[in-house]
Structures are given as structure tokens and as C-alpha cells.
Length: 130
Image 1 (cartoon, rainbow, N blue to C red):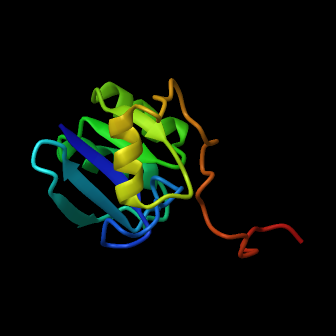
Image 2 (tube, rainbow, N blue to C red):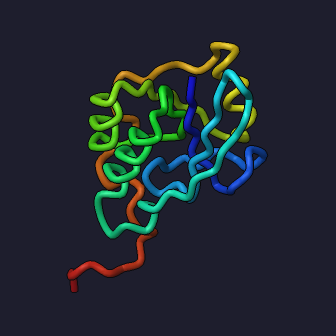
């Protein structure tokens, strides 16, 4: 089975990134071999639709499971349609998240865990209000 985990860094010792579409890296592990592979999330810097693009990329990786902090409605729809199980956790490393999943302590989510556009920006004040 292939598990994709959102990560703040390019190694399994880094913490999980809570924002799915804006995660800098995806770390993919094969549960049969125990090997880890890192892929940069090319959608992380997108001006819009990062979650959808990231979800399409995870589907292309043929992941069976996604472990992340939160996933928005559009990304969740793409992942669900692709048959990818989505589970959430936070405050742990990628390795710890995989261990939690293998022990059965993570729950599958049945819908989005974040509102649309929840991972956008950091309040940079670029709106048009005066």
C-alpha cells in the first residue's frame, strides 16, 4: 500500500504539514518495503486551486491513503473520487504518523476538515477595501 503524507520538510523526520494543498512536500511510503520517497508539491505556490492540483498529483502517485492535517472541500472531492482514503493527525513527524496509521489509531475522515480557501495567504492586506 502507498501512503502519502504532507510534510514541512523533505525527510520523514520532519513534522506533518497541516495544510494539504500548501504543503511544501509529499512523502510517500510503501508499507510493504518501508521505503520513503519525497516529492516536492508543485501546487504549493499556486495562486489558486492549490488543493485541487495537489489532490490530482496525489492521485497520479497512485496513493491509497493520504495523511495530512486538514483538507478542503475541493481537494477532498478529488481525493474521494480517486478512491484515496483521507486521515488526519497533527503535531507528529511523518514517521510517527505512519506508525499511528499502521497501529490503527488514526480515523478516516468522511468529508473536508477545512473551509474552502483556508490555506490561502497570511493576511497580507491585499484586499480592495478602503
